Image 1 (cartoon, rainbow, N blue to C red):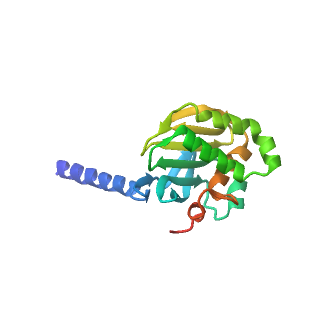
Image 2 (cartoon, rainbow, N blue to C red):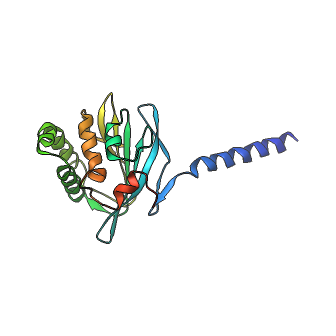
Image 3 (cartoon, helix red, strand yellow):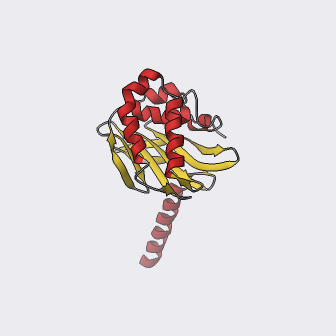
Amino acid sequence: MKARITALMTAAALALGSLSTAHAVEVQGAKLEDTATVAGKTLVLNGAGARIKAVFKVYAIGLYLTEKKTTTADILALNGPKRFKIVFLRDLTSEEFGSAFLAGINKNLEKDEKTKLVNQITKFGDLFTEFEGVKKGEVIIGDYNPAVGTTITLNGKQLGSPLPDVGFYNAILRIWIGANPADNMLKPLLLGEKP
């Protein structure tokens, strides 16, 4: 009897374990969890989608916030930690990825914003010299922690040192949700619209 109860409890635990991962979102075959933890706070997946350039699938991305928001202004004004998670759907050189990132930042910043953030933009550009490229399935995570600033990791390894200004983190987010997004189809998905 005791063995049977133990077996039932084990089966129940396994079933509960599988339920907790059932809510992960799948984007073009890449799994994005429905929550993330940054600076000790649980963040929710605000939206997710894929960056498509011409006919090529480049990466899947998820945006995590302390609470769901549906406008760019509300997301940028949100206090507290934030995260974006990118899962690559193809191989890219660091130069290809870095150039696209920096172009996206520049397209969405006014001249005075660029002047204010120039040092952090330069340091951010330097991060792309720390690796040769990314392979399909590899992951870049960009976290904003109010106590530390912006940190970027590639497959769990931090690149460079933290960049302190929340304005810089928001400049990165504007690559996808700004006035001139990298992908017009991706922006509404990150803002929480259903595909």
